[in-house]
Length: 514
Figure 1: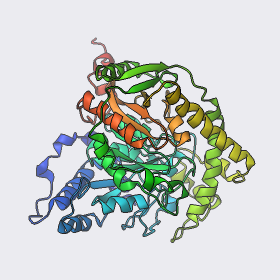
Figure 2: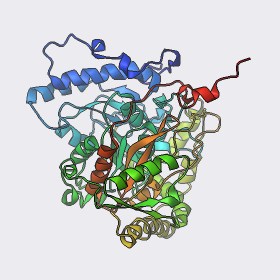
Figure 3: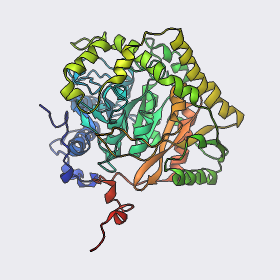
Figure 4: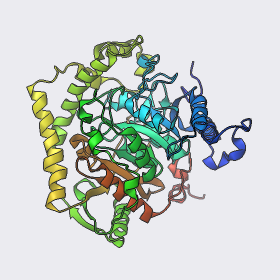
């Protein structure tokens, strides 16, 4: 049986804007509640109000109010104390909610474990208010998938236009922040799964250097590229979250340098400026309808004293040729290892997971199949061919890509459009993406990538990417913050049923008078 929050009914005819839910809608039977409890209750009320339309949340945390009261009683202070946070549902939390990756195969995956990043957020006083919907298995099951769909959560909708895709795989995290349910959420990225939903939903998303945040107790895809990252309304909020989430974990070898590299990322924003900084525009990864907004962003950077040069060529062939094979090889190894650790009954290997999907095809595979899972199962592990391809891709994206461009042109960061504007949700043809930016470079290299809203294309938001070298996380956040401050505020999501209703489109789409 589908409950309200586990399987949201999309009540499009009753769709309303966030402004309809003001303070009068919040429960008032809490005369003695402290600020953390009040804000947590308000977030829960907003989730209940918006989620039937947006589908961004899989489950509410039944322990959230108790956790908020504990923060109030402790008197804890800080930028995250008492702040409601949604966690993408491929990240384990010790609350009484399962970690499902959107799949019925993990519907009972109550592990009783906090991922280290969740523990860091709790230590900072954040309240885990619930789990965010996602593209099932972080969009690695099928190349014909629909971003934002999972068997447990249904389809996430873009709050700017409900017929538009929210992008994946951190679709629920992006749509929840954009719709006003919360201001803070956590996503994960292997290749674009923080950046794309952040840009397309009109929020901030930060994919840090791989190894800055532990991946332990997160449903895996790639040991080379996986990382979690904050998804927020502002860059400062992302910096606050990163400070709490980052750190060395002895059980994740990639994080060995994290403690030595991490800083107070919010404090590093205080001196942020574009003046005197040099940016390279990734013209080789631009276009797809974003040119006008990109030129406006460049003009703004130059007006603030920044220098901008064009980068017209980069051979990305070695990356595209090797990446999928590397990811599928890693998927089998890492998924087998993860499933084997689960304390409750669930598939114990990728092969068993494939069999589960076949046995439950009516619910799991009614829209698309699992050919990527099947291709991953056919791989043979970390052999010489895998290692050569992995190294080839990393070198092409990092030392011969981002690092070379930064050094040759004396740049502080690479910039460019993150993604095109949102495409329609299409259960017949799957995702119909018309282009993509330079985020794949940062994903394969494992380098930091920040996206910040830069404006709109026919009423739909698009983002500006800031990409730097390994461990340049604080600098990239500072540059994005300086741009965000110079850009000024942008409007909130409008909850249109279709973009055809927008002021930018409606008149042109009106039928002729007869």
